Amino acid sequence: MDIKLDNILGPEGVLGHLGHVRTAQEYLAVQSSYLQEQRLHGGPHGAPHATNVNARMKVYVNEGRLLIDCVCQNGVVVDAWLELACCFHCGAIYRGAQLVFPSEQDLKELDTLLAKRPTQNRHFRPGVESLADLRRENSERGLV
Image (cartoon, rainbow, N blue to C red; front, side, top):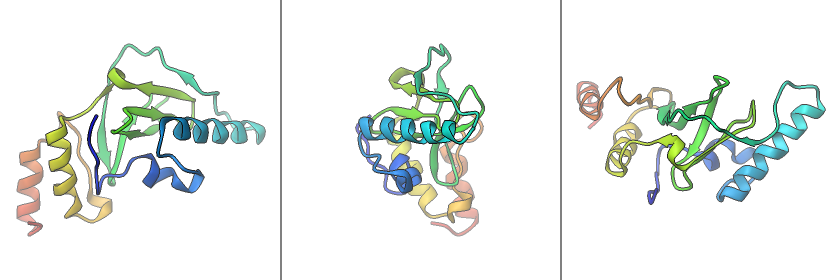
């Protein structure tokens, strides 16, 4: 996806404390390193692996973070630019067509609409609410 989001966070904004995550290689390396460390300390975490999940995972926004729900039920940070999501619990890796994004135009509008809200109120679930709902809610709260 050829889009840069200014206010909705992807891996660099959410996971940057674990290392640089600006490229696919960096995101995969940070995931691998984290999972290896967790396994060394007796955690139940899996090893990195490509998912063979046929289901397409809907991308949504929660507290200003771009996410999907992994098959293990963990929230997974999505990079819209790279079309990549790596689970830091089970090790699943989602790419490209496995991720269902709102259109680029809708993502840009989401980025603008949600930026007007406090971080803890930056949420959007496609199919549950619409951009019109967000515009109306922002207007009702004086967030124009």
